Amino acid sequence: MRRLAGKVAVVTGGARGIGLAVARAYAREGARVVVADLNAEGARAAAEDLGGGALGLVVDVADAGSVAAMIAAIVESCGRIDILMNNAGIGANTPFLETRLEDWNRILGVNLTGAFLVAQGCAREMVRVGEGGKIVNIASLSGQRGANGRAAYGSAKAGLELLTKVMAVELAEHGINVNNIAPGAIETDIARIMHDRATRAAYGRLIPMVRYGTPEEIADAAVFLCSDEARYVHGHTLNVDGGFREAGLMFKRDAPEA
Ligand SMILES: NC(=O)c1ccc[n+]([C@@H]2O[C@H](COP(=O)([O-])OP(=O)(O)OC[C@H]3O[C@@H](n4cnc5c(N)ncnc54)[C@H](O)[C@@H]3O)[C@@H](O)[C@H]2O)c1
Image (cartoon, rainbow, N blue to C red):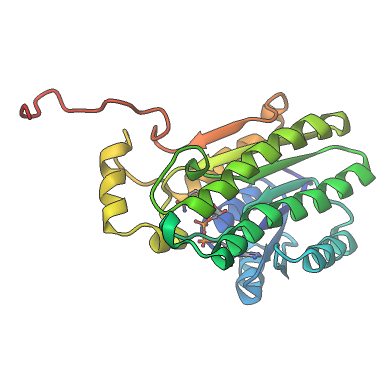
């Protein structure tokens, strides 16, 4: 039995990386997927590749008019929205003292305001149809822990975690489940921008599983949160991070004394 059969699932930032892996997993589970991305050609190619009536749309999640047009196009083509994977995001690795206001505004604009605009638009559609829904926001471990270069990015993701809790409280009465996935270090294009050699070496010491995660490992968690099996999971942040968040003292028994 395919777990998302008959559902209409919107994946923002679905042209590549984590979003593309989630789009593939949702399609595999029977959903009709809408890939919405700033990269119009990437969205179109991803939708064509997915098949099953998938739709590719261009959207700038940071632009309210663009989000409204995306929602209207989805409703016109699919009639409803059952699932939102609120994934589109941009990264930066900029020290606090060098973070310019324009960079701060750009990152908050996409990663927090953009997520808000898309979630609100999709939730309003779910409420209109009246049959509930599932929303999964993509936060980050950078929103939970202080880390080099993450002033704007981490602040946006921390805000998104809190927004998820408020949405969970307010949307429960409409049968809409809202949760977060917080990925740790996942091997994608954004990681190639944000993770220099020093960052990669640090992760090598700090992740108990001693490796980066894959987009497919985030997609598996996303399918679970959108399935009926997760119906009582609500307002939760699911860290998918190889143990990075929970790790403390780590050493090898036979390590030489300092
Ligand atoms: N890769 C990681 O290590 C990691 C860790 C934690 C959280 N995340 C989060 O996961 C999400 C996906 O990241 P990824 O690693 O797949 O990144 P990615 O750069 O590979 O993909 C991001 C996608 O979002 C799209 N996008 C960017 N700005 C957009 C906008 N304004 N409107 C619509 N689409 C836009 C891009 O075109 C791209 O297709 C992001 O929210 C990111 O912050 C990633």
